[in-house]
Amino acid sequence: MRLDNIFNLGIKELRGLLRDPLMMILIVYAFTVSIYTASTAAPETLNRATIAVVDEDQSPVSTRIITALYPPYFVTPEIISQSEMDHRMDAGRDTFALDIPPNFQRDLLAGRSPTIQINIDATRISQALTGGGYLQSIVSGEITEFLNRYRGQSSLPVDLALRSRFNPELNNGWFSAITNIITSITMLSIVLTGAALIREREHGTIEHLLVMPVTALEIMLSKVWSMALVVLIASLVALVVVVQGLLHIPIAGSVTLFMFGTVLMLFATTSLGIFLATIAGSMSQFGLLLIMVLLPLQMLSGTMTPRESMPEIIQTIMLAAPNTHFVMFAQAVLFRGAGFDVVWPQLLCLLVIGSILFVIALRRFREFLK
Image (cartoon, rainbow, N blue to C red; front, side, top):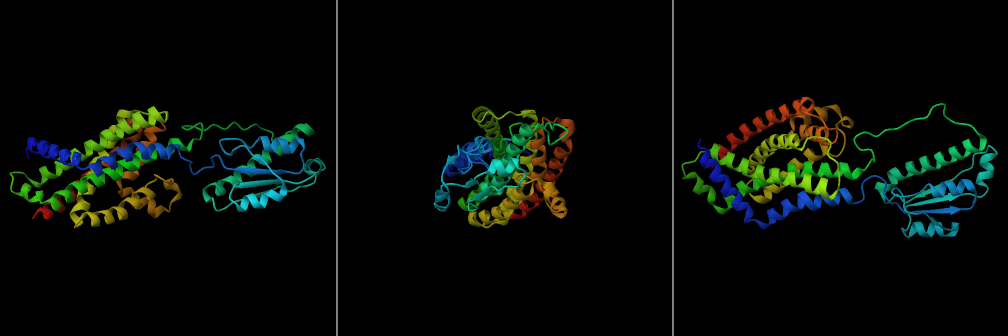
């Protein structure tokens, strides 16, 4: 194996990538626009939901409830009449409509159990799922505080002090930005290496390589290092420029350690990309294989939902996937500021999985060249 062959073949891959405008646009979009929009767009949690209030009581307690509905969870509530409520809900103008009945405060102080009606537009499912719970919590809290002050008593013998670690603002945008970097690293590393091999086969240049004094190992290593370098630089730019610069999201841990873990992740995923390309007969077949591979990797690795909420058999199976360990590693480093002494098991798993995938891909690649 000659290093100069690997280097020159890698430079050839980089030049071929630069001549592919669609791939360049995909790389720029995945590591800039996609990350920024995913972080700043309306998250899955409740965010600036439209709400209207029918205040038939117009008492101090109803005023407390209305003034407690404020951004970022809700927009400023609109005070409407009861006759307008159903029409506005039918027209889709309000996601939530709160109806406070007359004599609500009087019945409350008399020890009765008055009812507040909450209407929810369930077609806006992402907000409807969490919005009802937010409203119940806000209304119950305001009523409890009002009664405690009026009667001079406390409902709880202790005062609970809640502290949200690693994300004090409970900002879903922080999580979305890091998650999209992880997803882009996984997707682009597989796509670029697989597309580079298929592009050579479709253009007929793979036959040129076969008559040159190069080995299959040199060809494969050249594709691995060149495409991994592109994704590594793009991920560093995304982390420093987009996440820290534009979005002002703090990074708790070491960026250098994260880049080291990314190198091991790219070693595994670029090998996987070459393996998939040797199976696919064309770019369209490669695209179908990507759908079958990327969706389970993204959904079951802990990127979208915690692994602990999945069945144990799924958790065990997904330990064979490299991005499962990369997600645990990235969240520990970037969110919790973990050091090498904490994340070394994940780094070791990435190295082992990457080595296995590389050997399997190399054997398949040698058969592919015959």
